[in-house]
Image (cartoon, rainbow, N blue to C red; front, side, top):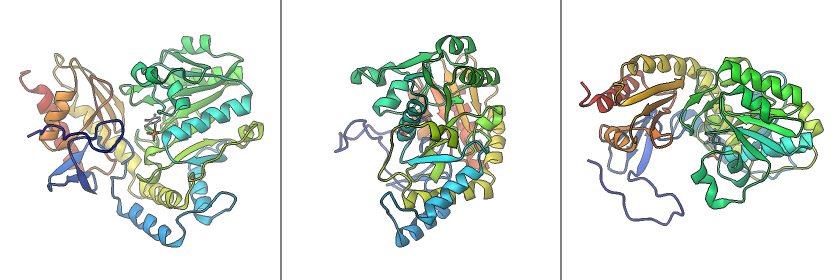
Length: 387
Ligand SMILES: *Cc1c(COP(=O)(O)O)cnc(C)c1O
């Protein structure tokens, strides 16, 4: 049974959901009435290791007893360890990282780095792109309902159709500081970039002197079957933007670039809590877990399982199934909300991407049985009455 939403609580803004979640274990979430749900997206891409991984909990607890905060201007071994661990997993050009606390902050840092390093102002982003909700990141975000109430936004942003190399070539010029793209558009409906598109973006950036930035806040950390999605295409950005699962669910953001870009950067940027010891300890642990538990391979394998299971959904209900690894979008011909409610009744929590796309973004640690059961529930919910 789906109960009506409770009356508004003290939290400003978006209505909290009906469910009160009190505990997590693996990909399971438990509510205040002891009911168990399988997370197929409830942790919105930040819970790739689940929402209570023991290794993350242990790292945070141990770090908290030693040093839970330090002001800037001092080094501390755990931050160095995290930065080294992150950069060691990236191609050699990535020698510098700016640490913050969220995806939107990591995007803000990218915008400032690009403007500060190029002396140019224009940012070219993609239609249907999502980059966060602070004013700079929101200026790069496409959806009108998110933008309009807060206009005027930051000037200098332009949106071009995604996966259209010609539009990119026409828009990017000697005034462009940055091209900002998601290798797979997550919030915008799960649209996967073509190899041709990302190669064109690299070529346009090189020709014009614009920096190429990939927002991998959602696709990063093994989600798409590689540690970073760009590794699939072999196209390296100048700026890589990470957050969500980077520290196993503990708030963090990272904007990674090269010493060459840093050398050109004029101005300053800083964050009090960015790179704090708790987040860095969690980040070190998360990168270890991703490798120890082979989560990239797992994402790839379970993504293939899903593609097979979802191959024959009824075309009168389903327009298309898209995705990469464990980032999957099922585009429906009708609104997705009733289907999400039906899944919740069956014990599976999925999320939308826009009004008509059912998005699957499960923890990469999801048990194979739970994943198969979730896919079966989706088939059931979407197939009901169709055959
Ligand atoms: C979620 C998301 C963001 C924003 O991250 P927050 O931590 O919510 O600020 C930015 N870019 C992409 C691609 C995202 O999926």
